[in-house]
Length: 114
Image (cartoon, rainbow, N blue to C red):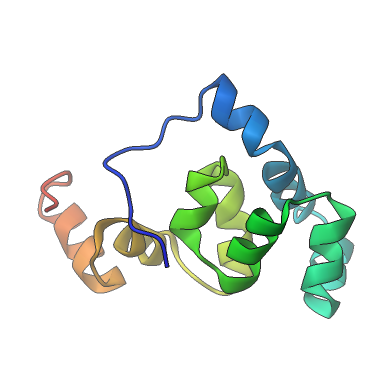
Protein backbone atom coordinates (compact mmCIF):
# COMPACT_ATOMS: atom_id res chain seq x y z
CA UNK A 1 0.00 0.00 0.00
CA UNK A 2 0.97 3.60 -0.52
CA UNK A 3 2.19 6.00 2.17
CA UNK A 4 0.14 9.14 2.82
CA UNK A 5 1.44 12.62 2.05
CA UNK A 6 0.87 15.55 4.40
CA UNK A 7 -2.04 16.85 2.34
CA UNK A 8 -3.92 16.40 -0.90
CA UNK A 9 -5.20 19.28 -2.95
CA UNK A 10 -7.79 18.53 -5.59
CA UNK A 11 -6.51 21.16 -7.98
CA UNK A 12 -7.09 21.30 -11.73
CA UNK A 13 -4.19 18.94 -12.52
CA UNK A 14 -5.31 16.30 -10.01
CA UNK A 15 -8.91 16.73 -11.05
CA UNK A 16 -8.01 15.98 -14.66
CA UNK A 17 -5.78 13.06 -13.69
CA UNK A 18 -8.47 11.55 -11.46
CA UNK A 19 -11.44 12.30 -13.70
CA UNK A 20 -12.17 8.68 -14.64
CA UNK A 21 -11.82 7.53 -11.02
CA UNK A 22 -14.10 10.24 -9.68
CA UNK A 23 -16.62 9.71 -12.46
CA UNK A 24 -16.75 5.99 -11.65
CA UNK A 25 -17.05 6.61 -7.91
CA UNK A 26 -19.81 9.12 -8.57
CA UNK A 27 -21.73 6.47 -10.49
CA UNK A 28 -22.12 4.53 -7.24
CA UNK A 29 -24.92 6.84 -6.22
CA UNK A 30 -27.18 4.53 -8.23
CA UNK A 31 -27.91 1.09 -6.78
CA UNK A 32 -27.77 -0.63 -10.15
CA UNK A 33 -24.22 0.66 -10.67
CA UNK A 34 -23.15 -0.57 -7.24
CA UNK A 35 -24.58 -3.98 -8.12
CA UNK A 36 -22.80 -4.02 -11.48
CA UNK A 37 -19.50 -3.07 -9.83
CA UNK A 38 -19.92 -5.77 -7.18
CA UNK A 39 -20.58 -8.38 -9.88
CA UNK A 40 -17.34 -7.65 -11.79
CA UNK A 41 -15.16 -4.90 -10.38
CA UNK A 42 -12.46 -5.15 -13.04
CA UNK A 43 -14.92 -4.92 -15.92
CA UNK A 44 -16.64 -1.95 -14.30
CA UNK A 45 -13.26 -0.17 -13.99
CA UNK A 46 -12.61 -0.88 -17.66
CA UNK A 47 -16.04 0.52 -18.59
CA UNK A 48 -15.02 3.85 -17.02
CA UNK A 49 -11.64 3.91 -18.76
CA UNK A 50 -9.43 3.69 -15.68
CA UNK A 51 -5.72 3.36 -16.34
CA UNK A 52 -4.09 0.12 -15.27
CA UNK A 53 -2.63 1.92 -12.26
CA UNK A 54 -6.01 3.37 -11.26
CA UNK A 55 -7.67 0.01 -11.70
CA UNK A 56 -5.02 -1.65 -9.53
CA UNK A 57 -5.48 0.75 -6.60
CA UNK A 58 -9.27 0.37 -6.77
CA UNK A 59 -9.16 -3.42 -6.86
CA UNK A 60 -6.59 -3.50 -4.03
CA UNK A 61 -8.46 -0.81 -2.06
CA UNK A 62 -5.28 1.23 -1.85
CA UNK A 63 -7.03 4.33 -0.50
CA UNK A 64 -3.90 6.48 -0.44
CA UNK A 65 -2.97 5.31 -3.92
CA UNK A 66 -6.37 6.48 -5.14
CA UNK A 67 -5.69 9.97 -3.78
CA UNK A 68 -2.21 9.93 -5.32
CA UNK A 69 -3.85 9.28 -8.70
CA UNK A 70 -6.26 12.20 -8.39
CA UNK A 71 -9.26 10.70 -6.62
CA UNK A 72 -11.28 12.98 -4.41
CA UNK A 73 -11.78 11.70 -0.86
CA UNK A 74 -15.44 12.62 -1.19
CA UNK A 75 -15.91 10.42 -4.24
CA UNK A 76 -13.67 7.57 -3.06
CA UNK A 77 -15.70 7.46 0.16
CA UNK A 78 -18.58 6.12 -1.96
CA UNK A 79 -16.46 3.02 -2.59
CA UNK A 80 -15.51 2.81 1.08
CA UNK A 81 -19.16 2.79 2.11
CA UNK A 82 -19.79 -0.07 -0.31
CA UNK A 83 -17.10 -1.96 1.63
CA UNK A 84 -18.80 -0.92 4.88
CA UNK A 85 -15.86 1.29 5.86
CA UNK A 86 -16.41 4.44 7.88
CA UNK A 87 -14.91 7.86 7.40
CA UNK A 88 -13.04 7.21 10.66
CA UNK A 89 -11.55 4.09 9.06
CA UNK A 90 -10.28 6.16 6.11
CA UNK A 91 -9.03 8.87 8.46
CA UNK A 92 -7.07 6.20 10.26
CA UNK A 93 -5.62 4.89 7.00
CA UNK A 94 -4.54 8.39 6.02
CA UNK A 95 -2.95 9.15 9.42
CA UNK A 96 -1.48 5.75 10.29
CA UNK A 97 -4.00 5.13 13.07
CA UNK A 98 -6.79 2.68 13.67
CA UNK A 99 -10.33 3.92 13.17
CA UNK A 100 -10.74 4.00 16.95
CA UNK A 101 -7.54 6.00 17.48
CA UNK A 102 -8.58 8.44 14.78
CA UNK A 103 -12.03 8.92 16.35
CA UNK A 104 -10.42 9.44 19.78
CA UNK A 105 -8.03 12.02 18.33
CA UNK A 106 -10.95 13.92 16.82
CA UNK A 107 -12.86 13.81 20.09
CA UNK A 108 -9.77 15.09 21.88
CA UNK A 109 -9.75 18.24 19.81
CA UNK A 110 -9.02 17.33 16.26
CA UNK A 111 -5.93 18.04 14.27
CA UNK A 112 -3.41 16.76 16.81
CA UNK A 113 -2.15 13.91 14.64
CA UNK A 114 1.34 12.63 14.31
